[in-house]
Length: 73
Image 1: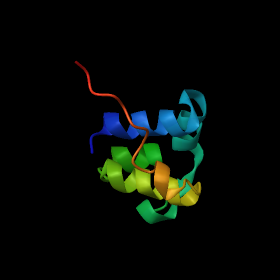
Image 2: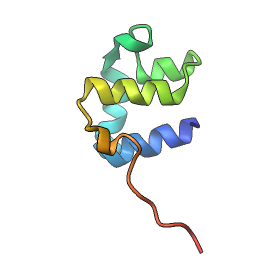
Image 3: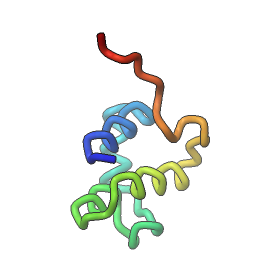
């Protein structure tokens, strides 16, 4: 997963404003006690950070892969 995918998932799940607040403020024990922003800067895998956010925020399994997007074409 790329960092851009992480942000797309965050925005889709939490809305663009709240997603950035969560990423900046929510401390995630599963990624070294960092916030999501700090974990990404520290080199953690964006997928690992996303799944930790999902765990802490109780995102249902059915939404952890993101919303379905129709293919271009």
